[in-house]
Length: 201
Image (cartoon, rainbow, N blue to C red):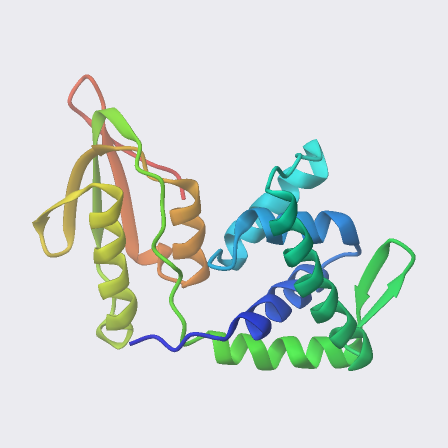
């Protein structure tokens, strides 16, 4: 069974990871984490953060949920500041050297955790084929992939070949990339002419 990181450590990991590449508006960071939910992967978080930067999406949740979430978020940010892991200057936050070291530690610990399988199902008019050849050393990731394909709505033709009239979610592609198994997976669509068309990775 995959080892789960407790909520506080998980959110800390996501905050530090998001800040490792750039300076981010504190309000945007909070809103994205709140909207994505605790179970979101780093790939999903970064995707939502980019959308937030571009469109400043409005997060609609109940007022009591917002107050409770802000309290938890503020507590974690305060702890990160107190521990010298981040610096907050006005509305901007940046990671420190100690924060980068903590991020490496959290990444190593999170490496044994598999992404949450929670993808939206969307039907398509054409068939999609997913074929893969995951090395035996990554059998946990291979088992995760099979569960995810079944959740999306594909049916197993062979153990490593799946078929269905479904659209492959972008978040699923990002999670496979994060697991470093995307190069072992081929995705094809059967066009109206009956030919195979490889879906870009």
